[in-house]
Image (cartoon, rainbow, N blue to C red; front, top):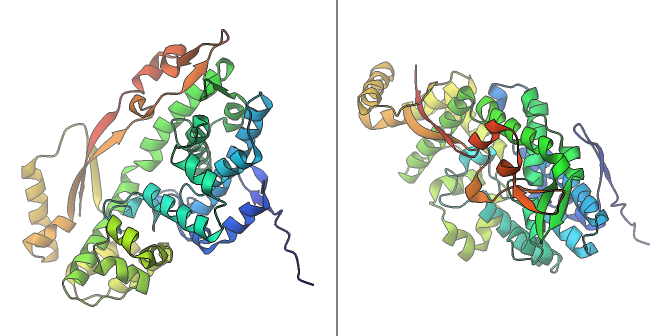
Length: 409
């Protein structure tokens, strides 16, 4: 007689306490190697260089978001919204798998490891591959994720201005970084969720919790996600991978795991994933450890640029970052590049790895991406900004742009 596995597992989460799997099929998905890879990908990349506690992973976040989705669906259903068991499972799977396409160090290397392919694109590829493996059990999940399901509020719970993704990562990132300004009342927000005209709404009495959510998001961006030292470390990581790719594609043999070497030696585009089934499986083997392990070896490479950059990252000797309200002048950039050439004895064309500029945009409430609708007591729907009596909230619907300059000291 074969042994039957108990799939009704419980996870003890530091944010929410005990989390139960709402369906046995969830266990099969979580146990899959594609999903287990998320344990080896940091949620906040190199943020632990600034906030030492920020070692949580995409696995933590995905399970936490699943928990919030399950609670939200129960609340909405109790308020009279019809949901089948299959629709609930589909939405839970969609949020559980929404980040499965992230590569090493999450967003940091999203455009370095692969070009022109977002993690959402890759997440969908993984979902489709899993759907084949599990005989169509993810059909509804994919419909909800791609917003092709008729109940649009299910997609809004996965991806919108107020989704389970944001509700979890703000609270989780706040907890692990110790930045208390990011704490939000996710439980209260969830209890205030409802559906009106097929769209997700928040009942009027929950408006102050939503205001706090928007403010917390703005603060967390400047204090954590766009912290200049975090940006310094992550830019350095990007430059290391850029240099390694350049060297490999010009014939140099570099130490790398087989899966990392594949992405360094090939210019991977969407066509590769669509036409070569093995590409997704190779990507599924890639995680933070491949990258960090290689960089530790590259510290002793004979290529001076790669060696210097790698040593800087491992020893946390980070480039200086300046953030200002005005763009950096070409004269300043040329001056800093010349200083890098003099300091390290590198060629002029290699100085671009040591000096970098970029635009930073903080948009806590983006009206172009849809709105958060408040369900008023008279049954009408009103956009959050119009419904709020908080004057400062209206300013958060406009993006704040600043300019970054990174250079080696």
